[in-house]
Amino acid sequence: MSARRVIGAARRRLAHQGGFSLVAVMLMMFGVTAVFAASYSAANGDIPLTGGDSARKDAYAAAEAGVNYYLYHLTQDNAYWTYCTNVPAPGPGQPNPVNDIWDGRGNDPRTWRKVPGTKNEYTIELLPANGSGYAKCNQANASQSMLDPTNGSFRIRATGRSRGKKRSIVATFRRKAFLDYLYFTDYETLDPVVYQTSDPTQQAQMAAQCTKYRRAGRPEPPCSRITFASADGLLGPFHTNDDIMVCGSPQFGRTAGDKIEVSGPAPGWQPNGCSASPNFVGTYKSSSPVLAMPQSNNALKSVATSQYTFTGTTTIQLNGSSMLVTNLAKGLNRSSMPLPSNGVVYVQNGICGVGYALYQDYNDPAGCADLWVQGSYSSSLTLASENDIIVNGNLTKSGNVTLGLIPNNFVRIYHPVTNRNGNACTNAAGAPTNVTIDAAILSLAHSFIVDNYFCGAPLGTLTVRGAIAQRFRGPVGTGGTNVATGYAKSYSYDDRLKYTNPPHFLSPVQAPWDLMRFTEQTPPR
Image 1 (cartoon, one colour):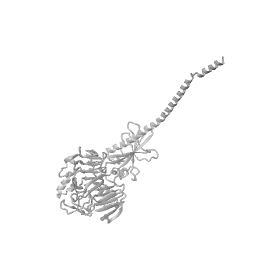
Image 2 (cartoon, one colour):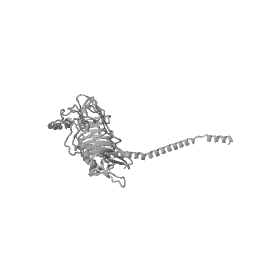
Image 3 (cartoon, rainbow, N blue to C red):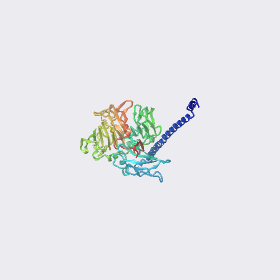
Image 4 (cartoon, one colour):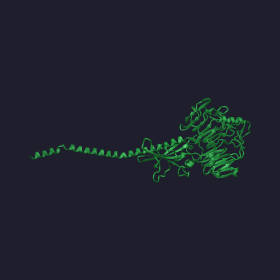
């Protein structure tokens, strides 16, 4: 073979591409395989994460089921919490899931209950109140072991578990309270005591006729019809066990978040012989449950220490974290005392024997539990009296603190008058003008009222920043669009009262419990 033919054959072999496509295919298959392997590895690695996330969600749902289980039983029986762990099992052969608190050490002693229809479980622990000194719920003294004295709430912890994952929720419960509202009344009528008829028989008849709700047939007249008018603004949540009379367009509430509740049947309000279109800025509800008031403040008397229990007329000038006290029975004359460590002062009757007088001359016997108070306070405090509390000046807070005023009878604004001739009287020296009160007021048997409200020149504005709860609606002045006597009203709600109450503040009798809030605890128990 010639050299030329050998070279040509070599060139043809070098130019042949039969094996090139095979190499390309092999490279492509290798790449696809690598991508598939990587994708499989990534997806396979996500399977445990996805399963863990699902288990965590199921554990949280189980914890929520535990909270709802406890709330359900609490709504069926208001006293359920006082039984501690001695509550009935949910059914035959089913464990009771309510446990004492577990500190997380040693083997888990808690009993668990399955969420119906699943394999997930929950358990519930009762959390003693901070500072109560109790290690667990004490059925013999459930109130002290479980209730937070600042707001009457208690807590539970519900833990859910699912496929090895746990999540815990701490839930806080509190009764519906008078301090959930800027304004609360039992009866929307004038206190029968304020009519002051000279005929004892007629007085007794008035008391019997006017201590019933309008829907139960309260006669008007002789019982007074009290009306909300256009000039009235109730800038906060509102509740009455009665129903309301309206003229014009008074405003109820600040936002839709404010509850506006009347216990009377729908519509729950009516015009008082006038054109009426109430402005319910808050969320309005008729046929709301009645919140029953305690008959007395004796529970506070049992809380007050002997050092801070006074007998007869008592004057307190608040001064930050201390107070100047005048009390004849204890021989105190503007004596300085620190505010009580448990936050409660109680004034009890000695020899009294008189009741409320429509015309106030301030000459009650020294044995009457009349508690006079004014000043500024920097610690939370509750002042209680077996008779009346009389505010004779500004009563203001300094700092993030609260004050409660809880008499058995009246909370009164001092208003001395002279030259009394029927209603034609004038303001006397010392009558306070433009009074400001930072307090939660609860008048158990009577009203929040201005003494001699019906006479004298206008006194400016009565500002209350807090809450007002009273058995009967008390007048603070007279007039319509313009104030003729007494004070114009400026009442605003202290939103802190939803969560922080004055010390040992009283709650409605047998009120239902509300779930205030719940938060997740991390790490779970």
